[in-house]
Length: 447
Image (tube, rainbow, N blue to C red; front, top):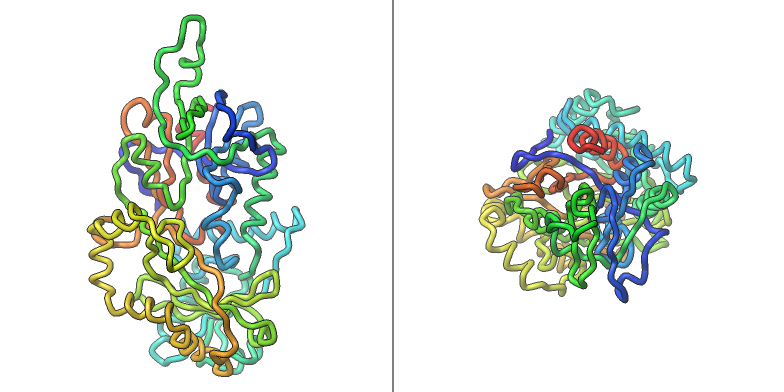
């Protein structure tokens, strides 16, 4: 499902790495382009690539506030290629995930990006989980997930010798990849097709250009000005923002509603010590519990040979805060003052306290993991990396699970599209999402 806000709808995105203008900090940038894309996460990069391949005669620029591309959610995730089991049959998320997984495998093969189709078991360890597991199987079959089957306890042991459970869904089409490597390859494709990338460009304003000086028609042909805090300016015909953790703030620049609000949730992983990697062959996931807002801890092998365990889910005190000690006063105040988060917390007090406790005392996290691999012990794990998820919330405290696009108001609104929410699994679905966004761009903008 797509939600359109403020009466405007369009979508574009973009990104890349090679043609980065590294001297942006020491000089003013003043250039004109047909389409500007703000934000170089994996969805932005994939869509920029798709657009420039469709419209090679147009000029595209990608503006990224960090010095590197794919620095946040796209570079801090579990690295799973999802198969499409969890999502409502017939929904946009389900269709995009199933197609996106196929496109992702094909892309990795073509570009020789390392990946492994190691499979996934969704394991029931309690009798009351079996009806939910069977319902997931039916859902997966309706979504045309490849090679999905139900296995018993013996089948679990055949696939994962150290895993214990009553019953499981076996999804051999699930895989793993380094999504940041994939994202950067999208960027290379974009650059090789003629796209321009500017890093260290933190957008502070998007507005209509004032009347052009006599003899200059730029203000007519390129009516949108995108400015940063250093005085640099890019002019363009159309803008797409794909800001991830800052998507709501970017949207408000052009007069959009502050909702849905982005609330950052940090997930902390544990890692298996190398001598214990033999315990895990593929992805091992719990059966989702509909009472709780997030999936729960799981076992995830990585393409580099490491094994991640987790994550938990706790409120981050900074939108890009990967440490428990990271704090930003504005981010913290914005989150806690938002009524939607207050309602979410009140409905999930016990769950939230448990997540915080397990984040501090990793023995509690290991105890949950032992339900699936009893041989695991506290001495087998170390604290690992963290990621921050851009969770969109509405004012009633509901997790926004749809794609949300917005344009804003006035003349700017007719030339800007904000991707306000691209829900998980956005990495797996990135090439399919890019096709959808590019189609919408072509129908809404005069390219």
